[in-house]
Structure formats: structure tokens, C-alpha cells
Length: 473
Image (cartoon, rainbow, N blue to C red; front, side, top):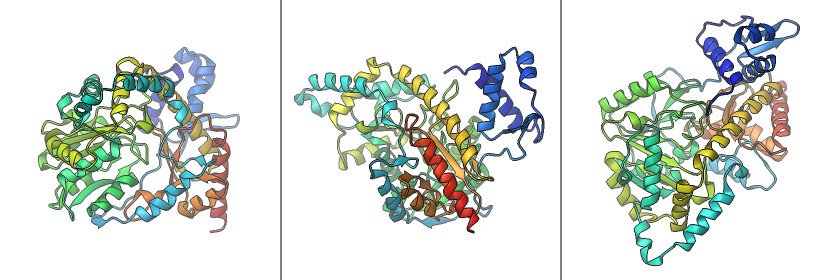
């Protein structure tokens, strides 16, 4: 997706600010100066500055212009400098308490894990499903047993090829959503008592999977700009009890941050040097805002160590429950585990997605979805900057639909979650994203509901509740 002129100008200034070339307190060119020097309209310059302001990188001073803010770092995921320890995981009770609130009708879904249903091509999918049902031949259903519908697996392999990653359709195993792909991969490389490297904060379902399989978590701090802490990760890979990594290097849930390509290359070299399998959770890969997708870690894998897991749930068809894993060396074990558990995915869903991908305008849908989410991110950042208490920081993701919000110390987001429910607002408190209940003043904010009239009032209410908590410390 080509960037608009104001976005290109904003990205250039973002790089200069984050690279240190524009120091805190530096005055930016006036709108008139920028318009003349860059040969852009004043409106374009204004839009670029408003975008930077929404990201928290610059501030407007009355009658003085725009200046680089003194605090320009995105919200960091806090972790100590001590060597990572392995810990037993017990998060499910807290997760279930929080998730139960998402079932309530009429609630503002700031804590939801899914974007709004109207963002998906439901009518086209229903047409594809109808075509698939008409072609359904009961005598050939066995052909869609694991590894799954061959036509769909070829379409997925083609998506890999378009991103520069070589994956054979024979390596792809279709699953009931990404969670089954991730869990089967985890089972293929671990035994109870083993340790698994995860990010901190971490997707709560990953922690629940570790808890159910009686595995230990080695939590590695995440940097809000680059993803996982590379030095801490290398230290963890040397541990004899670490048998796998479960990472989300693109638009990580909950922080929205991504690992840079340079770090991806370095990380894969270290991973292969130590021979540690990697479960790559890449369900948000298609939701990038820029011109090009991020290359998956799978594309740097020369040893078959990466089990790359994807899904259509976040970008196309949430209710169809179709995920997959490109299993590398572990594909045979994953296939056997699939056949010994859920056996097969729903055949109509597989056929419908194969039909849609072949003829349904998937790329056109993705371009539109990316534009909507990028615009909604800017709106969410602007509202957060306006309504949340002074000192609040939040990440600036380049894809997906989550902001990671860090309130000042004194705001307990689990208590904030319970208070917000009284106002029919759901949030995802930071404690559910850690095996050790860290991030007590943080929350994940879903901005993927652009037409929901409750969104701005909910942000304002959360800000008021957080400010009240600070006043009563």
C-alpha cells in the first residue's frame, strides 16, 4: 500500500526524531516553511504534524509552532536486567475472569482480541461458502482430512511465495484456528517440565497453553520499538532446560511492536546455532500499514527449526476457524498430533476459503483493511493523548490494531477493568499478559472498531477513571 504524501513526510520526521537527529525541544519547520521546502500543500504539512502529534513525538506550543517532545520513547515493556528465570504458569483464572466480560451484549470492546466484523468481506465469503457447499461431494470428504484441503494449502503456499518465503504445500497443515497450530507445534517439541521462551508481556493464550501442558515460562522483556530483548534472548537460548521459543515478531500481541529485520537475521543465526525450535506466531502479518510486509522469521530459516503459524481469523474470516502451520522438520509430528486430536477441520470452511482466495479479491480487501486500521490507529493515539492522564505512554505500532498503554504508577488496570465494566466498557489489563502478574499499570487497547460510536466516549471514561485513581493514591 503506497503511503500518502503526508504519511511519507511524517515517516521521514519520525526516523529523524527516533534516530536522535532531531533532539527533544527542537522546533520543526513551520507549516509554511515545510510547504515551501517540501513542495507540499499546507494541508499536507498539517496532516503530517497532526500524525506525529498523535504518535506522541511532537507537541504544539501556542503561537510558537511544533516542537519535538522531551519524552519521545514509546511505552516500554518493563523488565528487570536480571537473568531470566523459568516459572510455572498460573494465569487461567484471571484470564477467564477478564474474558467473561467480553460476552456481555452492548459492551464497548476495547479489550477484545478481534477487530470489528464489518471490516471483513462477509458477503463474498458467504457466496464462496455457497459455491463450496454445492460442490461438496461426500464421497471425497476424506481428501480434506489432514493435512487439509489441497487447493487451500496451495493458495497459502502462494501467499508465502509472494512474501519471498519458500514453503511447500506439503509442509502446510491446516488447523482449527491458529491456537491449534501453535499448541500442536508446542506439543511436538516439548515435554512437561520443559522451559519455553516467551515475550514479556506475552499473549495470554500462549501462557494458558504452557499452563495446560505443564511447561515453564522464561519471560524475556520486550522493547517497545524493536520487540524482544536480543541480549536476554541469547542468554536464555543457552539454558539446557529451554526446549523451544514461542514468539510473535510482527505486531506483537499485546504491545503491537515488531522485531526489526536486522534483529530477525541475528536472532535466527543464534537460534540455529543453539538448535532451539521456534514457534512463530504470525497471525497479524497481513495487517501492516507500510508499503511492504515484514519478512517472517521462517524466511531466514535454513535448518527447518521454525514452525510458522498463521490464520485467517484476524484478517479475513474470524468465524471460519481456519489456521495453519508450516511445520518445517516437525511437520510429520504435528500432522500425527492433529490426526490424534481434532482430526479434521470443517470441510465447507476449507473449501470456501480456497474458493475466495482464488477468485474473491483478497488483495483488494487487505488494502482496504490496512487503510482503515492505519487511520484508526492515528485516531486512537490522538484520543489517548487527549484523554489519558499526563505521563501516560503508549506504543506506536506499524500494523495490527492494538495499543499498549502504560499509565503512571498508581493506576491498577485490573481494578480499572472492574470499574470500567460498571460503565459497560471492557479493557484487557496488563496482568493477564505475564506469568508473574507484571504490568499492573498497563493495558491493551483494541482500536479495530472504527464505526463503533462508543469508542471515543469509552476512551474518555477510561481516562477519567485512571485520573481518579491517581488523585486517590
